[in-house]
Amino acid sequence: MTANNDILLGYFDSLLTPEPTESFVDQDSLSNMLAAVTDAPMADVYVAPLMSDTIATGFRLIPLMTPPTTTIMTTALSLTMTFELLSLAAKLGRGRIKTHVMVACAGVIADG
Amino acid sequence: MRIWSVSNQKGGVGKTTSVVSLGGLLAAQGKRVLLVDLDPHGSLTSYFGQDPDGLERSLYHLFFEKRWRNVDYIRETLQPTSMDNVSLLPATTSLATLERQVSGQDGMGLVLARSLAQLWDDYDYAILDTPPILGVLLVNALAACQQLVIPTQTEFLALKGLERMVHTLKMVMTSQKRQLPYCIVPTLFDRRTSASLTSLKEMRRTYKESLWDEAIPVDTRLRDASFKGVFPHQLDPESRGVRAYKHLLASLDREEP
Image 1 (cartoon, rainbow over the protein chains, first blue to last red):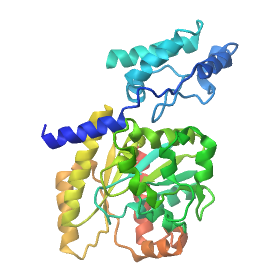
Image 2 (tube, rainbow over the protein chains, first blue to last red; image 1 turned 180 degrees about the horizontal axis):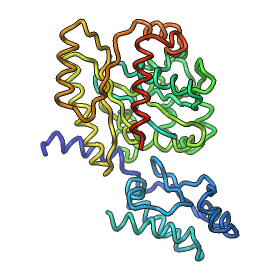
Image 3 (cartoon, chains in turn green, yellow; image 1 turned 120 degrees about the horizontal axis):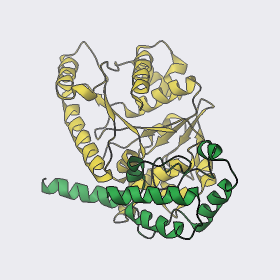
Image 4 (spheres, rainbow over the protein chains, first blue to last red; image 1 turned 180 degrees about the vertical axis):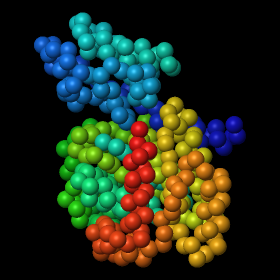
């Protein structure tokens, strides 16, 4: 790789790496999502959007109602946000949302 | 929402014309379309009669104070066009100062993606018109889009710009660890000139797999439409340019994942 490419790649990395201090998911959002699915039958959970149905990170975010895939997670999540999510998920009670978030985070960490 | 970026690091290749033509044709199919002007020159904004020097709100303001989180703010920034189901997120000339203002701030390449995420259910398509220069605005477009359209004028100097654009794209894909499909679209093709024929032949030789197999011809009706501030298909649905863009749209739709 040339020095010019190194400079450009550093520039792109800087622009495309979320600020470490930014928080895109808060406790209320996850709690609301959890509340929205508590009494819903499993079939509905996979069809109906939950809240905004996404966790905002950048492009097509994570549809929480569908089983996450490693590919989507890798493009949608940064490691910083992954750990942020994990710390929030740890405070949630057992449930599908918690499972999905944990699986999503595991996918990113495994891939990263 | 599907997000297409129309980009090339060379100017005058037909980016804005492509954005307007594709957006208008999608809207004619009943799709809800958002056109986004990321060029400080504001050509797309001017196209629809707005003044890039006089607007109170524009894409520029979404880069500060984290206003992209507020969907109402973004919606209020949108401007109408000559079709009801097409909106414009306009540019102002202040965008030209963005590079200096956001320099060194991590994550500024993701602002547009996050803003569009707020409008995810409002539109079927967003089409991005980018500046002909590598910088924070172009990076925002590449980070946000799911498909890249690279209009390339069929002349020798444009081939160098194309080479640069593809190089930039590959580096952004490396940085983002994702693949971004792209389609090179020969534009301003004039079969009477050897420059057009030679450069098209060279494009086919070098970029065979990513090159659209037709070309957008030179068509004064496209220029007439911009003068009147209407979509080209509204002015003349049977013009050569509009017919070519219909073919391009069908081709892009076929390639959608």
